[in-house]
Length: 213
Image 1 (cartoon, rainbow, N blue to C red):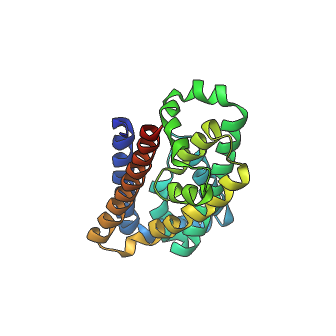
Image 2: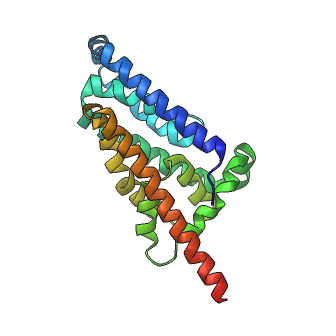
């Protein structure tokens, strides 16, 4: 099972944007904090909306905004705002995919290649598998894939497993600025390896069942 070049390239671009934003946030930390604080709660509302849109619109990402949020409100508040936005976006994306399947596939045909994700969620211990997938796959892709192809997954399962799965990473990405470059690289590499191992195991299990049949 291979991830597409476009997905890998997109992830690389996202990481570069995140690192660049972190550097800018450090250089202009005083100016950014001063500007955002003058906006009051509207700044936080805007941040949550951008986080939700990052999940609803697969080509958009709010990762580059995280370092600015950390500078303005601190890592704890930024993590909580991310969780709210990402969860809201996941619920909306799941609903759109389930309700308007044909329209979504016509708008984003590339989502069809993620139909295999349904095979990574066995009927037994489905919630545990979903939590693990939430920790290893982009929220937007998984939310749409589950809504489109996993009809046995309810919106409540999607919402709860999203909350559990994204929470650790919301805090990691918000606090990652305090780590050195080696630790940051280790976090990203570990996440990629975890998904690769999980996907390989599921693929081997499926092959074994087919051979037995």
